[in-house]
Every structure is written in C-alpha cells, then in structure tokens.
Length: 195
Ligand code: UDP
Image (cartoon, helix red, strand yellow):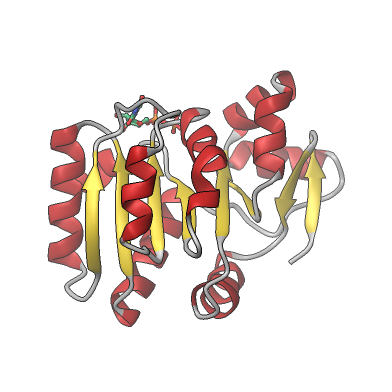
C-alpha cells in the first residue's frame, strides 16, 4: 500500500476494501502488530504544530484519510488519494471480520456507562466476537497496569476511544507490551456504538 504525503502526514493511498483485505491477510492472520490512525483535518492540523504528536502519527502502520477535507487537500496538492475511509466504517468492518473469525476484542475509552453499553451492543450484534473486556477512558495514560492487564488477554483487536491526541499517545506508550493485535484509535465511536 503506497503512501502519499499530505502536509507532512503519510496517508495510505488505498480503498477501504483493499485495506481491509490487507489487514485481514497480513495483519490478523499472521499476527503482525498494527497501529492504525484515522486522521481528519483537525488531526493533520494538530500534527503540523506538534512535532511529538506528528512523530507518533508517522510511526503508525496506516494513516487513513477520515474526512472529506483530507481528500480535497490531496486533490488540490495534485496527489489525489483513492478514497475517504471513515473511522467508524473501518471499525464496523473490523468488527464484522472479528465476528466471522471469532477474534478477541477489547474496548478502551469513553465514559464507563458508554463503554459498557457499547460492549453490550457489540455482543448483541456480533454474536461470535470474543469480547475480552472493556474499560472506561478516564485514565492516566502513563499508567502501565491497565495496558499490562489488557495484554494478558492477548486481544486480536483493541479499539481505543480516548479522543486525540490521547489515544495515539496511549498506543505509542504501550504498544510494546503487546505481542500482536490491531490497535486503532476510534475517537467518539463508542458513543455511536452505545446508541
Ligand atoms: N474520552 C476518554 N478519555 C479522555 C477524554 C475523552 O475516554 O480522557 C472519550 C470521550 O468520552 C469520548 C471520546 O473520548 O467518547 C472523544 O471523542 P471525540 O469525538 O472528542 O474524539 P475525536 O474524534 O475528537 O478524536
């Protein structure tokens, strides 16, 4: 999957379908650890002002253009990206895949009542997902006890909904504690999943 630089961020130039196939084949089946960022214009702007944050984003495996603004920018810069991939849609596809393959999923983020409802809805809608657990997102991102506990479950997919830049900082700090898994920042998606 090639990358196109938009304002200093290397975006994956790929359709959602091809990305999901790649994640499935190379990442989930072979257990390759993978960090996915879905970057909207606010994230691109924040990264342009904050070098530490930009370095974290650039260390990810895939930066996905979430938001039509990024697609417009890519056209104006004469390096058009294939398509917009909404973070929520990608999360939904990954949940579907997890259901088909009985993968182990962990949900981290949002208010306690929200993540609890989101977890209940995931279990209702995706009967074969192995939901390893969930935890609210009002945590100290430096704390290692929680990520260590999550890593013991050996999850295939961890969705992290702390909002940006926290979710990326959390992934950046704690990814080394895991041997495998897809790690994806999903912003406010648990609020949507909770209904
Ligand atoms: N959140 C959290 N911990 C925090 C701050 C926010 O879990 O310390 C949650 C918040 O409850 C909400 C999500 O993160 O569910 C933030 O969503 P938002 O749409 O603001 O994120 P963005 O799309 O801007 O990254």
